[in-house]
Image 1 (cartoon, rainbow, N blue to C red):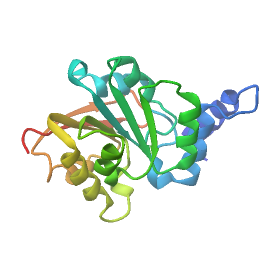
Image 2 (image 1 turned 45 degrees about the vertical axis):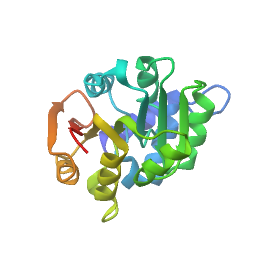
Image 3 (image 1 turned 90 degrees about the vertical axis):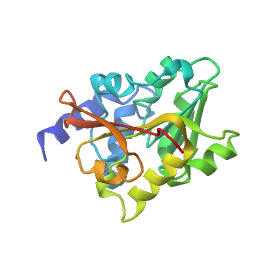
Length: 209
């Protein structure tokens, strides 16, 4: 077992709550062990990665923020802290256990946790009464998704975003750029070393329809 896995197991033991309900680290680890292809990491993102990833969002003009693969809500709470009182965060995950956990843990009227696929983002938004998203955040491991799923998600995300919005992607492999570049001509990039593992950060902008 790797040192990172051992450290994660130790944190999980410490994170289990007195009442017996799993804490966020326990849930995250269980999700990784069941669906490593979809979760992508054994440890949640660092606070520094979160701050950097969200630093380019125009919060004053954000009404609908979408996150793919929210897991245990590592990004959900920081996003909600920044969102306007009348804005909405839509979290989409294919893991029903994560969705149930988030619905139980985050009691915010601006929060919507949806069990579904990121490739169906437009339908999900329409079902919730929204025409588009202002920003979409994703930590999904594009390079390990089943063939065709990565491009489908990138294509659907571009269609669902408003002009001027952006697809925010954090990833451990730079290969993710190959999935999003065909749909987003303008992409900003940064590297975040303070994370396990270090991450590539991308902001893919929708400049026109």
